[in-house]
Amino acid sequence: MRIILTLFLFLSFQLQAEELISSSDVELIISNFKSDSLSNNVIDKNIQIGANTNISIEFGITSKGNGGIELPGIFLLRLYDMHGDLSYFKDGLLNNELIDINSDGYKDILLWGTAIKSDDDGNNLGEVSVLAVLVYSPKDKVYKILRKSEEIDIYIDE
Image 1 (spheres, rainbow, N blue to C red):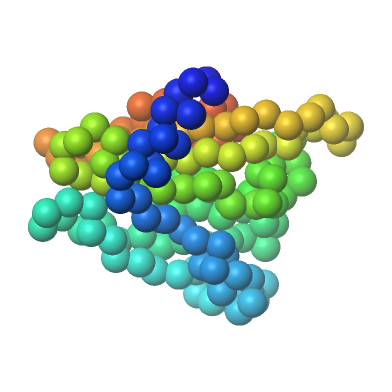
Image 2 (cartoon, rainbow, N blue to C red):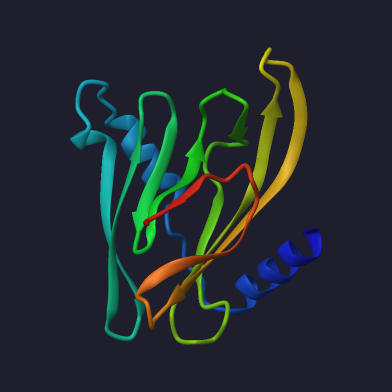
C-alpha cells in the first residue's frame, strides 16, 4: 500500500490538485458549532470536477465528532473522525485532494492519512496508514471506489 500511496502523492504534487475539504472548513464548522442545530454544523460547496460538470457537496460534523460528505454515487464518505471509538483519524481530517488521476478530464478523489485503532476495551492498538481512491465515471455520472482502507467508511448509493 505504501507504494500506491507514494505514487498518488507524487502525482498530486505534479498535477494541479485542490482540497475537497480544508482544515479551515473544519475550523469554521467547529467555531460555529451548535449541538441543537444541524444547519450551523455544515458547509455547502459547489465544485467544478470537469468541463461543464459541477457537483454540490455538503460537509458536516456531528456532535460525536464524525464528519462526512455526500457525492454522486456515494451516500456517505467519512473523511473526518475525532470520535474515539474503535478507530479515528489522527488530526481528525484526512488529507484529501481533487485530482485527475486517470487523465480523463474529471477530478477524482484521493484521501490518505493515519487511523488510530483501539480494541473494545479502549486499549490503543497503534496507528495504520489509510488510503481511499474514488474515480469519477463520466458515463455513469457517479464516483466509484477504486481502492479503500477498511478504516475509511464509504457507503455507496444502491
